[in-house]
Image 1 (cartoon, rainbow, N blue to C red):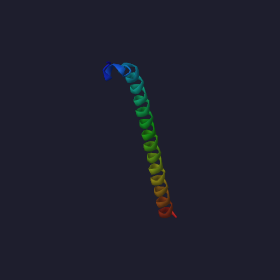
Image 2 (cartoon, rainbow, N blue to C red):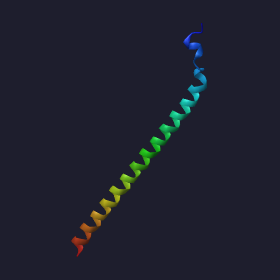
Image 3 (tube, rainbow, N blue to C red):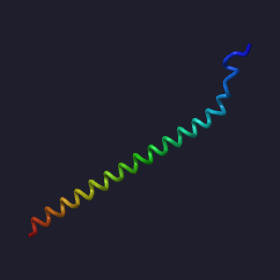
Image 4 (cartoon, one colour):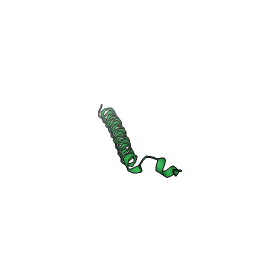
Amino acid sequence: MLSQASQLPPLTEYGSAVAVAVAVAVAVAVAVAVAVAVAVAVAVAVALALTSFSMTKSAVF
């Protein structure tokens, strides 16, 4: 009678594939997070620039 462990596929075959899949998923998640952070930073910078410009414009004129 075979033990249940001997019927399972070797973990090394799937372990490396899972590790690669997890690494790719983490890389994609980090890239998305960085892109969102950059977009938010640009939006804040534009909003501040517009606010500053409108305040300067109203003060001058």
